[in-house]
Length: 278
Image (tube, rainbow, N blue to C red; front, side, top):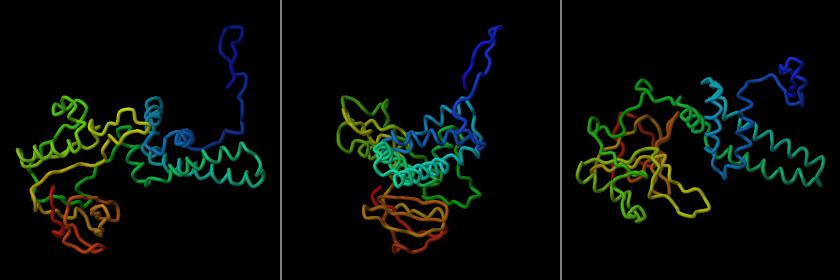
C-alpha cells in the first residue's frame, strides 16, 4: 500500500500495488505461503517453521481451527508450486530461471511431505501452547501396569545438569550410564522428554546436531511386564524396534522382548510384551 500525508499532515492511502495477489480466503493462507517458502531454507527440518508461527501468533492470535488447517495448506502450497513449475517448464523449457526455481520448489515439496500430518499438527499446536493431551476417556491403558503409582527418578541430561562436569558429557554412552546409576539407587529412572541433551552437541559441525529428543528412555527392572496401551498390531523393525500400530496412534519401543508374532493383533487388555534390558 502506498501512503502520503495530506495538507493536514494526515496519512492518506494513495494506492495499492499488485492487485493480482489479492484473494478472499482464510487469513491463515498468508502464513501457509510464508511457511512453505521457509521450508526451502530449513535444511530438511520441517520444524524450522515453528518460530515463524509463534511470531505470527504473538501479533495476530490464531484460532485453533486455523492452526489445524495450517500444515495441510502448507503441503498444498508445496504441491501447487511444483505443478506450476512443471507446467511452465513445458511451455518454456529453455528458461534457466524456471529450472533454478524448480530445484527450490521440489525441495519445499520433499520437506513438506517428509512427516505425517498428525505430527506437524501436534507440533504446531504445541508451539503456541495449544497442545491437546490424551484423556482417559480415549481408551488408553497403562503401558507399564505393574509400575502404576511408582515414581521414576527423572535424570537431568540438559546443559545445566549437575551430573556433567570436566567434560564428561563427551564420553560415549554417558546418558545411559547416568540412567543406569540412578536406576540402581532408585529402582526406576527416566530421561526427560524434549530436554536438549548436552551429550549430543557436536562442536564445529556443519549440520544441526540431534540434541532434542522426541522420546523418553526408561530404565526398569528386567522382566517388567509391558501391555499394549490400545488395540493394534505388533511389528518388529530391523533395528530392534517394536511398534504397536493402532487406528489413531503408534507406539515405538526398543529394548522390549515380544511374546507375540509380528503382525499379530493384540488388545489393550492382554499382557503381550515383556521388557528386556531396560
